[in-house]
Image (cartoon, rainbow, N blue to C red; front, side):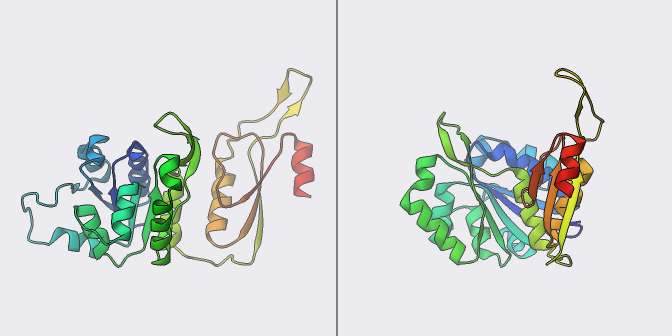
Length: 261
């Protein structure tokens, strides 16, 4: 799907760095060429070797590393990017980017790129809600950056609240959406059924089947990416349903029938 596409991922310091490993892996599975730029703080959480192994590419950390080619590296990476992603995006990097500060390789490169920029913030709830951070995010959004929503849950500081980086699948889906804007199903309504139904025999036993729901969810996801308004009627399943479809959960065969009708 992403064969021949170049994705540059800027990784900043934060516990959510581990999630970006999955982003890189999934992009590679889709055929993309992935280059990773890490801040020195990011390298304290996950080593560059991890991303080098996943991407099969050299990972850039130090702006003043010994020269290995005669390209100006931040310019070459900026120019080759079809999409530039910053994930996780710390408050520090968001603030510097909004102010045009370029004091590390990641910021230098993203300021030089003409590619769409996707930002996946991750930080403590109080930091995220701080007026300065919110104004910086609004500034970047006005300039054309795509700001992905954060998630609520338990944070690294032990508190529970908003500020978790979005799931890796959300980042990958947004990249695919930006690079594969095929909208041939726009204006169409698509109904998909997926997953197993459960028919109860009594309070303890039931009859079901081995359907995982994976194929139906993929069909629903693909149709939504192509512009359709998708309703997914989902029985018992082993997969996470797509985020951009309307899900109706059912249990029995009769429930499935009624929902479809």
